[in-house]
Image (cartoon, rainbow, N blue to C red):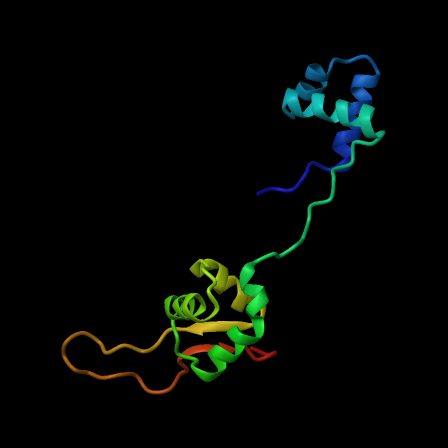
Length: 142
């Protein structure tokens, strides 16, 4: 989603309308939709300003209520998949959460998911050596 139009553009459209142009004419001149120019004029009449309203920055995810439990879970069992974490969250905390919500929860806290090494094909070449597995906290210099 893109952000709001700049205050400068809003003020120039309003100024053009106040100088005699129609809202639709000003919209064409400044390459915005007619409905946008009409709404800006209505906002100006109603509030005295064309500034955009601030967007809320809340994170009301239901998984946040279980932060300590979720962080302890991956510390104890770092190789859990997101699906397994979601199943545990449902069975133990009675919270149904999407995989993306769980992913975002860990991402915000610097915990990343590292894929496990898998055997290569059916030739029995085994696993690669080294590397980390499962969820782990990222270091500050990584």
